[in-house]
Image 1 (cartoon, rainbow, N blue to C red):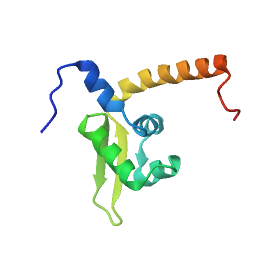
Image 2: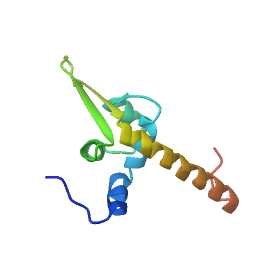
Image 3: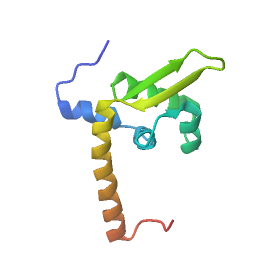
Length: 110
């Protein structure tokens, strides 16, 4: 059963809340990825959290999961149209973070 929201902002925050969803979305913004690729790109995430986050993103219509009937199983994740719209917002959030960290001199040298 889908959750019904009394506030659209609550829904938006639910979609991206958590430690890992933003990172998953950011990595999917460039291209379709398989589960293993995401795991390598986000090495500190546990299998359980990656699976849980992907399921929540799929349930919220942000990520599409495509399963191929091959052996070994192949699953790919892509952004939906809603996910692509969200990337624009995340990009602005990233720009804000870069600007603010630079101004406050709190960004670690890469």
